[in-house]
Length: 185
Image 1: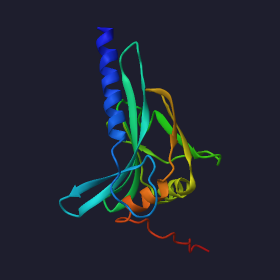
Image 2: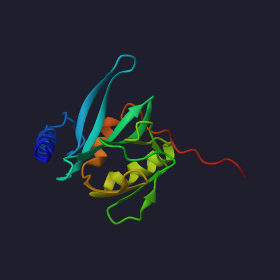
Image 3: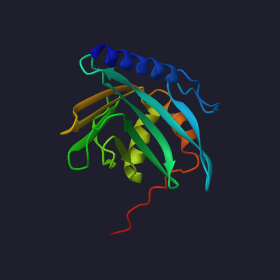
């Protein structure tokens, strides 16, 4: 039975590798490297783009479990968001935390929400999204850590080159609101 799990995990890994080889949609603002742009059709607001980059995978030869994820930049309710999806339960608001850094810059504890599926993390606060996108714009590498009572520590290292043109294209329909100065004396 263990052999079936291993074969299944390898088959899924090969199909994920094939998916990540798909060419991105045509864009004009620079190379996307490993980023992929996909068209999303919204019946109300029309088409939009989602910029995604696969987070790789790990497989357990003992259980046959394949763990993988995806980092998405997208518009949701006319606002830019960062969505991190896993194919396993990663944690909840009460039991997990997210931190990241770009290249050799200082690390950031992200203000993120874990959705009810316990497998999806969302960064949707405009100031947090702005900070994330500013770091991504010039970065070559991102290191992310999810500390979770459910899944333990998950450490991810991504080649995020091309993040600036990918985010510009995906978020063109929902730009961040301008920073407003605090008028309190």
